[in-house]
Image 1: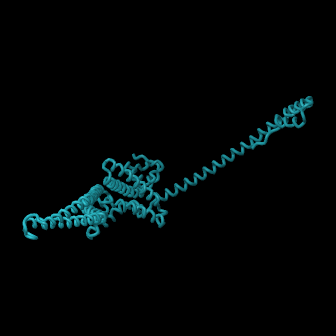
Image 2: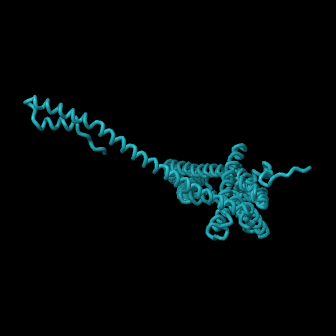
Image 3: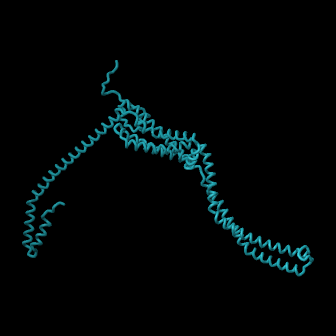
Amino acid sequence: MERNVPVSQRESYNPTPFSGFLWWLATAEKEILVDSVVDRNRYRIIGMTVLATWAFATFTWTYFFSTFVDSLAIAIALGLFMGFIILTIDRALIKGITKFNKRKLAPLLFRGLLALTIGTFMAQPAVLYMFDKEIKLQTSLDNEKKKMLKQAELVTLYKTPKEALTKEQTILKTELSAKADLVNTARNNFLAETDGSGGSGKVGIKDIAIAKRNEYQKLDAEYQNLLRSTQPKLDSNDAALGNIDDKIKAEEANFLLYLNNGFLTRVEALSNLLKNNPALQFRYYLIVFILMLIELMPVIAKTILPSGSYDEKVMLREEMEIDIAHSNMRKEQQLKEIYNQLAFENDSDAIAAFFSLTREDRRDKINGFSKKWKDDNHQTFDGFWEKMKKEILTKQEN
């Protein structure tokens, strides 16, 4: 025999822990949703979209942090933290979308722009991961271009002082060379005169040879003096040119330390890679659009899925709680007013009884003060009155 169970005692639906977790992701109230049969699956679907977006955000942020953080554990921890923030934002967005504001353009537009912004940024690390090999190659080429550009900038920067030093070196060396040529010519003329191969044709040192020797010695002395005065300038200019070259090499070496393959460098490489590759551009924008849809999935799912009894129950439950809260506050106010009224009445009776009971005693005390003042001939009436006010009369409450 089957047992007849009253309608009011039927067993209620108990969701699985995973279903309850999906409902939590979808920001659904479990206590209300268990009685909405059709909406249960809808909110499972919304919860799955939030779960997928959460996982995607965690992965992309982890990869983003791994591009400039050396420790993988720190990158994973930061990725989980940022993924949790994205989860919180997504839950806030879909919580604000209900049956009663789906047709309101302003809130929906704001949520769409927020999700679009987050999705655009989140798509970047994912695209960089997908085109990792191509981007590494482009990064290497970009770094070489940057290095050549830096070299050209350094050459331009030190061009003026180097040209000035080089020009001065050329002038000094030209002057020395011209003087040396004169000395060599005079020497050759002197030697030619002594061996008879030139000039007068007489062998030996004669008057003409002596004159040519004196001319040679004079020019040689002038050359040596010029060399002694010019050589320090030549050495100084050579040292200055060497210092400039050393500075250029040092700055080039320092610049190489800043060349890297970080996140922004990869983004720049991706941009350069897309400029001259139409096929890659199409696939890039297609991938970005798909990845952005992943972030927009919770908002899209909550917007396009039809609303059932759950939203109605939530609205009615919220209105009921608001009415109950107002009713409770009114009752609390009434109780406080009754308490204050009864307290006022009882306190009035107590004060009246107090003054009634102390009336005769106060008169007796006044008589006592009066007799004492009568017997004391030195106390004035004003002094007696001041003492009466202090001892007998009451003070108004502030």
